[in-house]
Image (cartoon, rainbow, N blue to C red; front, top):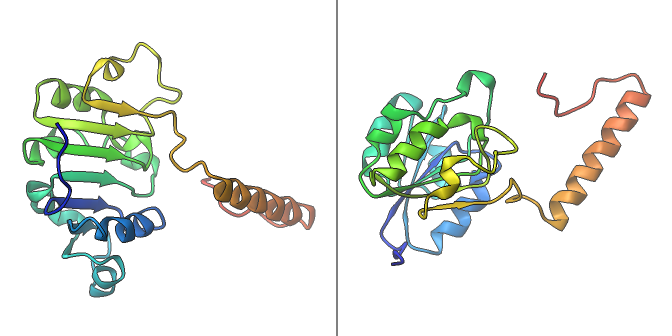
Length: 184
């Protein structure tokens, strides 16, 4: 059975380039939009159209009222598994988890158990704790999981942006400069 988005609390965990267009789209669905950010200042609340914004230290308070948690934060290796048993248990019963950030931020075994036992109503996953995800991963057997193979951001526009960034980096390397957008 489908659930109406209107009136639901949607929490955007991470308020950056992925979250901003998502926030704008969600406003048309009359959701209560909240956010979690390292920098929860008033300008973020206004820019993203949030009801309120929580700091990382206040995330338990945000989770307690969240019906749909959208993980859209940047990823560093220190963040691996940061959404685990404790964090998923803080979400209200029947909540949904959507991960469009990086798979490593969520503990896959814990997510599976929270979905299988019914604490979480469902999950939408475009990224996984291991990529490519093995075809025999138990998460893929659950009827309350929608999984896509890391293609959520693949569009003609994104391919054009990627091609432009590659061309810029080739030129930078040709000129003896360091490439942009490196994770190391």
